[in-house]
Length: 421
Image 1 (cartoon, helix red, strand yellow):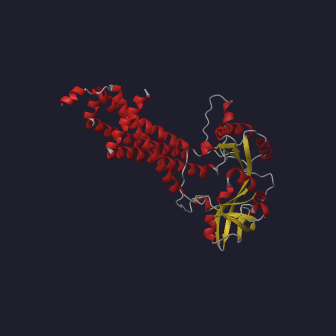
Image 2 (cartoon, rainbow, N blue to C red; image 1 turned 120 degrees about the vertical axis):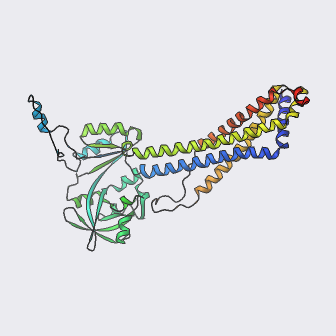
Image 3 (cartoon, rainbow, N blue to C red; image 1 turned 180 degrees about the vertical axis):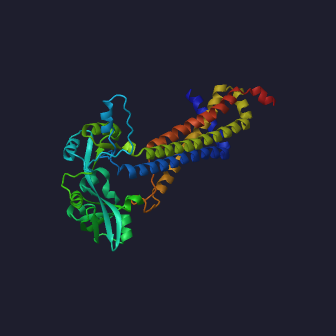
């Protein structure tokens, strides 16, 4: 049995080496198909991870705030329901008066911190201000934050392009200024900035850092200060919290927990899935397109192998006749050609993995600098082992299938008919 197997392998080797050009072309078809699959999937999924990270790292799993909206039941409707045969038309319904701050925010924060599902919860106070530049007043928003928790939970430090994120912790009147505002006002770290609160009070703040999110509409208006400083600008007490940002251990539980929070505390709780529904759809479509294009490349490579092996059979008609005439069975002939296909798949697959990984490393080290993405220094690549595993399995499967049909045809050839011909 082992002798017969060695003989089949030896004949397959002779066939492959006798037609070196065709063998090389078939192997290169597999190589380029697999390498392009690895490169495209590594780059596209790396890009998706990058974009997801830019959005999700700074997006809380649950946002808690008060939402101004009309009451579901108007008083006049309640009154008319008790009367028979009355029809009341209500027009221009006004929203129910609600404070911007979250009622009983300290208790909510305490319970969230003690919830096993919650990784962390950090409060914010939002101020509408004017950035003063001579006679120009530029609209802006200042968020009061707990910098230590923002860094821990939302990678806030990665978005500080100049200065120190902890400057607002060390110095109360320090501000992390949006990059767009800093550019408009020609300001840098260490400069003074005059602002005016909504109540008309003026404040002088020292720029401790420049913040850049990569979204121009945010960087043109938004800045950050210490939570206590924001409450002072608003002219409110330390219990004034505009928003609470929550991060969970498991992001998948955000939708359920947000509904629970709404019912318990009578607030609006927005989960990350609802907040980023369009972005998630776009990410899924990009990944699907990547898989479709990449698998198409592998299928095309498989057809190339099939055509080459098919030509092998026509060129090896005499060899097949001699093999069968000397005692080789149809199964032996079929195994010879399948072995050739498998050898092409292994060689092409190994070269494809090496080429795909090498090109991916090169792309990963190409500088990529843009103001829109301050935290990105090179093109994103995802070195997921699953891509290499899929490539190997597909290479072997496609080459075996591509070799099986011609091999089946060779098995059925009649040696007498070939010799007569």
